[in-house]
Image (cartoon, rainbow, N blue to C red; front, side):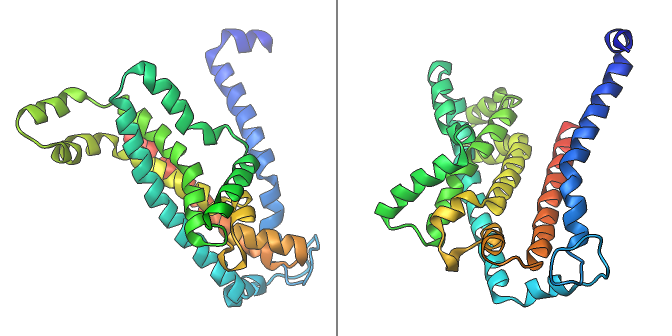
Length: 267
């Protein structure tokens, strides 16, 4: 077996794909339990399922708390996506036009939320927002989510800029095009894939966040993950499973869209 792995490229590729598939199956196992349980007719968690029903999905739709949480999640995620995409794109463009010696430390500083544990970021934002009066508001939650979403946009747009042909921008400028027109006609079409990927990342990061919401948001600003956390802590309700399936479905759909976008850009 060792000789096959060392000597045969096809066998190595098969072996690594087998490992990747096993890891993927292992990580997906909880979904194989949660999804069927969300269709359980019983008012408690029981497995195997004796009867199936959509009652818990109906309960989520009919509940004012869940509807408010879904509305908050969409508002915060869309606003975060817009702010993070604009900020991250501008930051990437600015970093691409400065010297390498200054670019590296600035990039590391702006991307630091990727390396800092979420709980530390949440605690820091809580103390800062408490003095600024931003706790318990959707604005504060949007700004907090933007803080952790900007690095994703920065990374994807910076990667797209490495393939950007700057001679085209210089040629357009030499022919009299103003900077805005150069960006709209030359730069944007070449980095559009990176911007869209970053926007999808920003939406997912905001839509799935629970740690920052625990510290920043009050009950009127609870998002879907925060509402699920509250339900698990205070009252075990099978409606949580239905909400979890909806949340997971949205996340998977966005990730598939990201993969298709990357594949399309690579062709």
